[in-house]
Image (cartoon, rainbow, N blue to C red; front, top):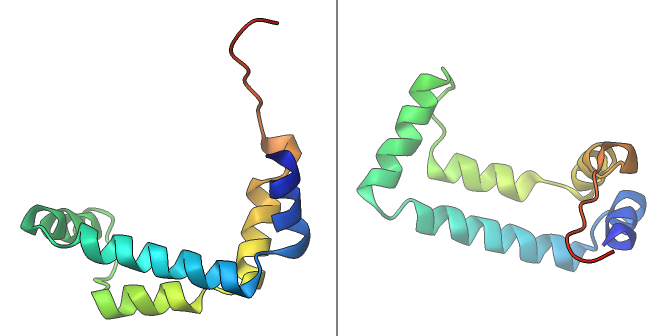
Length: 92
C-alpha cells in the first residue's frame, strides 16, 4: 500500500486512470442526487456552510478540471508518511 501511495506522490496518476476516476466520481454524484432527500440535503449544506449554490453542471465541470498535478499536489500533502499511522490487528 505504501509503495502505491509513494508512486502517486512521485508520478501522479496516469491520464487513463485519472479519466476513469473522474467518470466514476461523476457517476456517483449523479446517482446520489436522484432522491429528493439527497437534493435537499445538498442544498441545506450550501446554506449551512454559507457557500454559493453550485449546480450539477458546475460540479461536473470542477471534477473535469482536476489535473494530474492537482492529484499529485494533494497526494504529496496527505500521503506524506509523517502524517500516516499504521494499525495492525492480529497476532504478533
